[in-house]
Length: 468
Image (cartoon, rainbow, N blue to C red):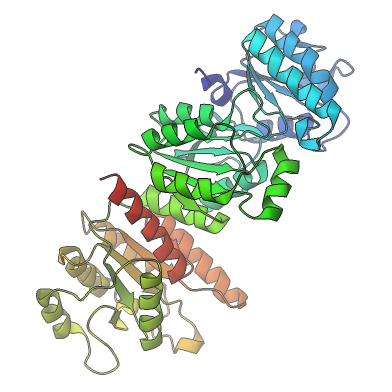
């Protein structure tokens, strides 16, 4: 299925771009496309205007100097069927329908219009995203009228029934240095459905990881069969909306989707090998881990940090996620006992040693030991943000040197950091966000808590265990 023109169009017609307002719709999308420096041609269609946002306006598709690769429909719902026929006559087969007012409003007229959209598109062999959706997003093509602007190129593909969730995901990933190749908000998915996009992204060599947000599905058998095949070569990380009764009812009014019962979805995740997440944070954390980390050799975690209480609770957190906190090898313990202070520290796993906070070279040596220890599959390093409450013993942030040393270690086991900056202190929150972003931008995942780090590592381990 040829969907490339949705993501790499040379020219876009915005049908319904207003010259009077920048309210959400055609004119706001046109404004954002100009803001993101879309390199192709933009054709505003408005029969009542001569110019929109400094661009020549056209009365209709037939008056354009060339058939646009993609048409974006921002006209009222009752006008969409005729617009689809105009697209077919002009030779434009790729249409994004932003307009709402179809089956999601649950009226006879809405259902009738949606049925017309489907029948006309099938008859005319049109590819249609939507209706009732934000449409395609592709930073590499300058196609960033929504989501993170201008966005960041990467290897993630996103398929979502929610434009808002997709927009937030692209922003969240952007500030952690994780790029997106293609994203699509599919709305009611009347013509092209989530499985069409899944198959397309599976075959896309630019995409290594696929993120999905679904509220419902019509063809469960096709989803299971396709997802099982996709997961053999690419991780699929799925946030299933509408798992509760209230959520399922809301999904119906959001995109007209039937969310379905919980138990078939549980069976699907188990049989297909799809990674199941239940929140935006968990979605982002899993994508961060899959994007930056190598395959783990086991589920044994080496916890590096300081503080007796942290050592206890961090161990509990890993165990609760189904990971292990193993005893270290005799060789590793012998070497640790030579360097770890006898008083105020504990040599072992977890490692309670204040030196790892202040001395990047020392931390590098500890990591080197971890990478050689056969019991260690993954490493979690706790970071301390200097502040008065901790009698901080260093003034400058050692993070840049830590990054340099880790990158110099060569092949390494999955290694993540935890940066605790919660609690309401705005200075701590700012410093924590800056430290986390600096690590993530260096492709070293950093999480705001041990619980989130352990959960992401468990997702990574489970996928590679099922797909060695």
